[in-house]
Image (cartoon, rainbow, N blue to C red; front, side):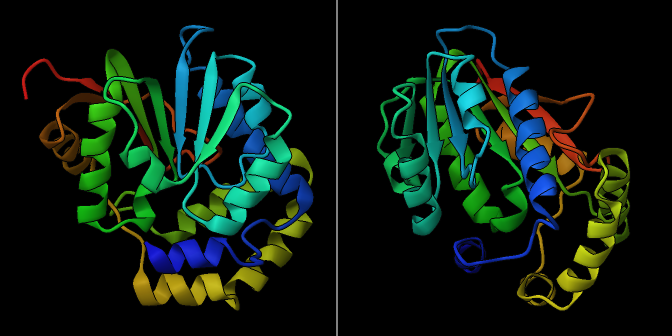
Length: 233
C-alpha cells in the first residue's frame, strides 16, 4: 500500500477537473450519510482521502473520525476541518490503538484495491474490534475480477456526460494513460475480489456480510458490502 500512499500524497491527476473532484466527494458523502442511522453515531472513514465533503457527513452524526495514511493529505484535512468540532483527523496507526467497541459505523470506500490481501485482512480484524455490537462496516468500491478497466472508463465518461464535464473526462483519460497512475497500476496492479471472496474475508474477520444493492460513488460495476459483527467468531 505504501506506493499508493506516496502517489496520493503527491500532486496527481486522478480527477479530470475541479468539477469532477467536487462531485466525486459530494456523491460519496451523500452515500455515506445514507448509512448513518443515528445523529449520535461515531463514524470512522478509513483511509478517507481528501474528504472534501466531510462537513456534510459530520453534520449527520455525533463524531466523524477521518483516518488517512498519507501525511500530506492528513495535514490538509487538519487545516481544512480545524473549526469543525465534530471532526477528528487521525492516522491509521492511531486507528490501531483506538478503544474496543468505540465506533458505530466504519466506511472503507475505494481502499481495498490498494491493499495487499494480508493488509486488508489485518484492517478488517481491527475494524471488527472497534465496532460496537450493533455497529456496521460498509466496504465500498470493490473491483471484480471479471470487470476490466474498460468499465472504469465507461463509468467516468457516463458520469462526465451526466454532469457536464465529458470533454474534460476525455482529455483526462489521455493524461491518465501517460501518468504515474497508469504506470503504477501496470506495475503493482489493483486487488480484485469476487463477491464470494470478499464475503469469505469478512466472515474470517468476524463479520456477517451481504452485498449492497448499489455501490458507493458513481461506478455501478464495482461492489459495496454491508458487514455487521457476527455473534459467532
